[in-house]
Amino acid sequence: MTRLLRSRFALVLALAADLVLYAGVHGPYDYSRSSFEAALSLQEQVTDEWLTRDGVVGTAIGVDGAGRAVLKVYLVSPGITTFPNFVADVQVVPEVTGRFTALPMSAESAEAADPTKSFPRPVPIGVSTGHGRVTAGTIGARATDGDRTFALSNNHIFAANNIGQTGDNLLQPGVVDGGRDPDDVIGTLYDYEPISFCKALLCPPNEIDAAIALTTTDDVGVETPEGGYGTPRSWSADAELGMSVQKYGRTTGHTVGQVTGLNATIDVGYRDGKARFEGQIVISGRGFSAGGDSGSLVVSKGLLMADRRPVGLLFAGTATSTLANPIDVVLDRFGIRIDGN
Image 1 (cartoon, rainbow, N blue to C red):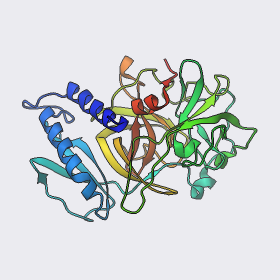
Image 2: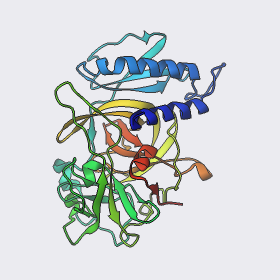
Image 3: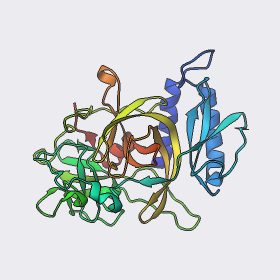
Image 4: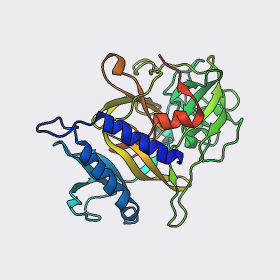
C-alpha cells in the first residue's frame, strides 16, 4: 500500500472514530458516518473529471450544519461552471476561493517587508527564512529525530522548488528581508520531499510541500515571538471540521481560522507550474495567511491540553482560504517530531 493510500486510510479511520451518528439536532460541524463515507466515495469518483473543467481548482469534504457531510467544489469565480445540487444523495456545495497559490513572499511586495527583521540566535519560530534563491517564507517549528535538531518549512522555501542541494545554506531572515549568506545562516538544507508538477493533462498527486534544515538549539528556538501562541505541543492532533486553529507567520503574524474542508484535492500554482495535492486541510478565515507565511506551523486553538497541538504545515492559499499538509504525514516523511512541550 502506498504512503498516500495509507495516509488516506488513516484519515478515514480517524474521522470515523470521532463521528457522531445523526439523530436529530447537532452542532454545525457534526455529521454522520454514513454521510461522510458517501461524500468521500463521490469525491473519489468525480474529482479528476471536475478538475479538468475551467475554473475548478479542487474538492474537499465539508459539512452542511444539519448532520450531513457534503462535497465542496472550489471555484475561481462565481458562475464559471455549474454542478447539480445533489449527486447520489450527496449535496454538492460550490465555494468561490480563487486560485490557490504557494505563499512565499512575492517580489512585488518586497517594499512592504521590514529589511531589519533579524532575530538574535536562537531565532524564534514563525519568522522570516529562506533559501538564498527564495524571497522569504516562515520557519514553522523546531524538530528533532532524537539526536539531531532541524528547522521545518516548505520545499518551496528551503529547497526553492526542488532545485536546492543538500548542504545549501538557509537564512534568517530571508533574502527579501535583508538576509545575506553567510552572515545570516541558521542551518543547511538536509532533506525535502520533491514536488511533482503537472505536465500537459498528467498531474501526479503530491501529499506534502515540506523540507527540513539541519540546525542547532543555539540557532533556532521553540517559541514564537512575543504576541504569538508560544511553544507548540510535541504531540499532534488530527484536523476536524470546525476545529479552531492558529498560526504565527512571517507576514501576518498570529492569526486564527477554522478548518472547513478535509481530504482536499487542490491544484496549486507555483512559480514553476501547477501541482496537484491530495489529502489536504482547508482553513477558512480572511487574513489567516498571505504571501510569506508559507512554512508556518498550524496548531489547534483550545483549552488546556487541547491547545497548541500541531495540525498542519501551511503552504498555499487564496484571499479567503488556506491550505495545509496534515502534520503527521510531514513528520512521518522525515522521521521527526515537533520539539515543543
